Image (cartoon, rainbow, N blue to C red; front, side):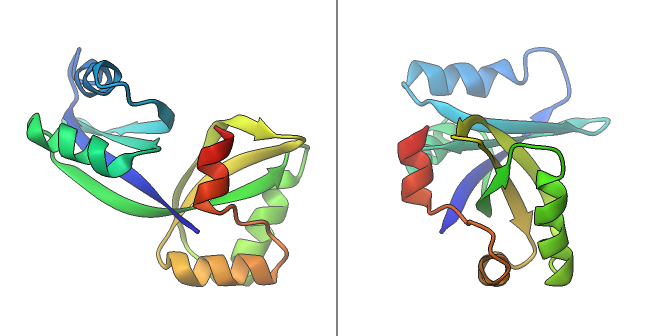
Length: 144
């Protein structure tokens, strides 16, 4: 049920973001969702793709340093308080959220968020115990 995310460190300068994106596009990889965070000298591009292993290999062959991270995708009611309900389950379980971001796709009246927890396996177990729908990787990638 864990989802693989690729993280790339990029220089914080014009054009740095377009290089890996164009490389992936030319090789016909579809980016399902992404997040970018910046610091003074560098940025971190986080990507989720269907065939992450091949994408990782392509990026590394072109000089990028790529880190693979386990993420957990959950359904969240797309209404006021939907995220608060998920975070209540996270808090009650004593889980630490390192970061999170959303998919642009929705499933019926649900949004999809991906979380990075300090212990993804424990997070999956605890969230399910609190009635949170953790989305299986196969189901998620088939939807988008």
